[in-house]
Image (cartoon, rainbow, N blue to C red; front, side, top):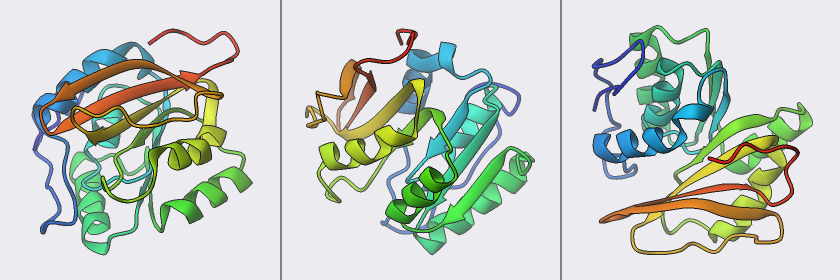
Length: 189
């Protein structure tokens, strides 16, 4: 795996060993970042199921202000920690080792809000609409949620609070991007 663009372009990052994570392929990540490129500069990023940290680290490389990265799995967390250090992004990244529910609770208590929220949960983990309902509370008014899900599917989402603004599929994996239905002066993705 490598960082595709920005100040760390071409630098290699590790993927966690084992079968517990599913790193986003470089070509999928490149297409994803092409879709959201106008939103990255200066953004506050939340990556709830960070795995290797590739999405957060790509964001920082491309000009995001900061990233909060959450990972429960010890091996994936350690891999993210090494990747952050190898790129020299320690001052911009906060890596938390905890369950996503605890992270959501702690971030809400701290009144944190994010411009970009990446969600790449295990495909069989929980219903997507429930997860999206929980994380919408952490969105900045004009923020977006980027959900990775099984390809050729349309995940359910809370249509009363979110609207799907872009959807793409690459074989086994799909990406859906959401905005709030009634945001304050939201910029279209």
